[in-house]
Image (cartoon, rainbow, N blue to C red; front, side):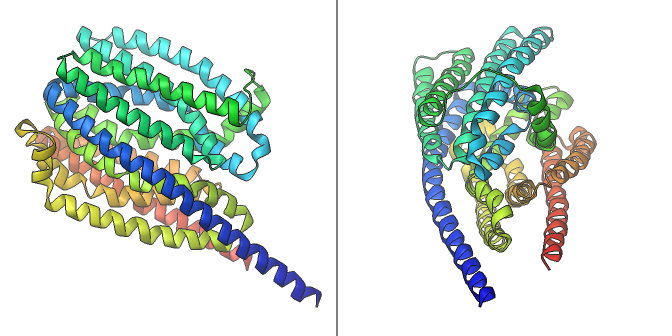
Amino acid sequence: MANKVKDLTKFIRDTSTEIFAKKRIVNNIFILYGAHIISKIIGFFTFTFLAKYLGSENFGIISFAFASTGIIVLIIDMGFNPLITREIARDNSRTEKYVNNIFTFRIFLSFLIFFFFTLFVFGQNYSLVKKEVIFLIGISAILNVLYNNFVAIFQGFNYFFYQAIVQIFTSVGMFIGVILVMKFKFSIIWCASLYVLFSIISFLYSLIVYLSKISPIQMKINIRFLKEIFNTGLPFFLSSIILSFFPRIDVILLSHITGTDNHAGWFNASWKIVETLIFVPSLYMAVIYPSLSELSIVSRNELEKIIKSSFKYLFGISFVLSFLIFIYSKPIILLLYNTEYTPSISILKIIIWQLIFISLNFLYGGILAAINKQIFTFLSAFVILFFNIFLDFLLIPKYNRIGASLSSTLSQCLLCLFLYFWVKKFLGEINECKK
């Protein structure tokens, strides 16, 4: 009798956990997808207007600035964001301890890194305009790191509404700003300044929401605790650095090897289409990652169910999108840009297939992080990065933008196979332990 009561209690608990998790996931997907679709549509047209207005050379400068400053962003980020989300989702009572230490550390590190980054940029043999653009985009990037600190917290609490507000406001504001830049024929410096303006607004809004809805911030650092979370977050940090190189390394090496910014501009114009579509897996994983983290402890059965349904969804939608973009790549490029970007058509036909592999990489990487196996995402990405660089040096000198496209796509495919292997291995071990 006691065993039956125990089994019934377990069944009720698991069922209620399943219903609550599914309802929460659906609500959060609806909120975040709705906001992101709106912001991405507006942002995509903002991007294409900016590309047409600046031309391939100046647009290449903007692309180079984002690729360069993205590296310092990863250093300041330190891989703490997925750790914050995971730990807060598991235990909300630890919020203040995590936030106080990490936010204080990031403020200090931001000033230090940006100081040396500025010295490095202005010591290079770039034009003054290129230096100024990189400097401004760098300020925007650091502010975005601090803003994303609060986004990670909101996701841990399942407060996706506040993130949605910022996305819509920023996209509309940038669109209006670019229209004004085009109307009054402002320079590329004004374009870069727009990114700084809306990064400031996003950061201040998120800070106010956190202070009013969650808790005050105390600027202090506990060295022992910071060392502990650094050790735990190190695989996240290393993985984020390595993974961020995949789109950026192709842009940088294209510009360096070919000796012109035009190829970088053509490649980035095509990549922006893929990047716009990446919101499908990235938002989906942002929503289910807190649930994966929680269910990895609470209910392994429900964890496996979410993983199976997520694979079907991500693979199905990414394949359909890739196929459609491949078929209509020429009219898409000519519609969104102009004839100056005709070389982007052949690039798009190749790199659009990355969407399938990237979607599954989001899923497999999220699973490994949720079950505390994030180190294997880093190890896989580390190996593939060198494979990507090797292919770039092998293919770009002969095939230019096509070589970079092939290198990038093959690298994502191989990374997907690596991550799948680890997920299958560790989920199998979990099941064996349960037996």
